[in-house]
Image (cartoon, rainbow, N blue to C red; front, side):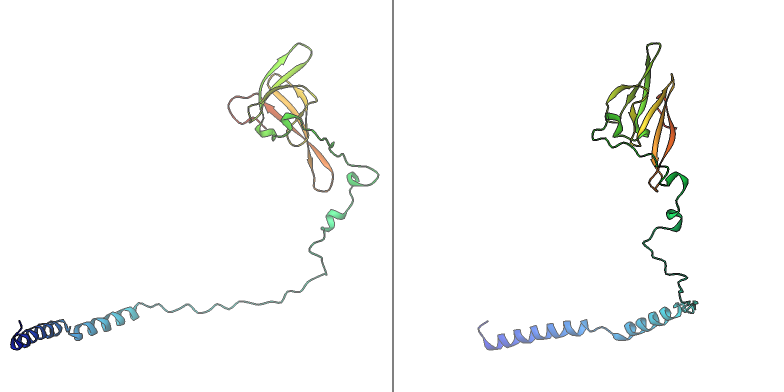
Length: 186
């Protein structure tokens, strides 16, 4: 390979191989250009026209009064006989300590059974946390200031107090049925 003729011959061979490879890689552009044109014309055929813009009626808001959006409605300002200053509404007692079954909604408490000595009855109540206790008429039960009013063989009647939103409280009777594996609040 030290001979200059051999070097030159080798260079010519390499150059001719590279030139031949480059000429073979030259693609014919005509079929490719034709394919692009056909694809573009087909794509243009499927473009759907846009729907015309719908016109909307624009109206100007006119306030009928200078109502303050943060003020209570007029119905809330009316004083009913139950909320008048002459007749005070019942308010629940404020107790610092809560009894064990006052932390749970009445729907989560289960009436498990009754114990009776002939003149008074005790109900057996179970809480979701597993606590079980005996309760009697007058005990507090549930989150809504519920007070047990009656214990029967199959039910416990509870009078709950619910806020009416205007500062007064309304009573509601709830009944716990003897637990049978289903939801027990009626």
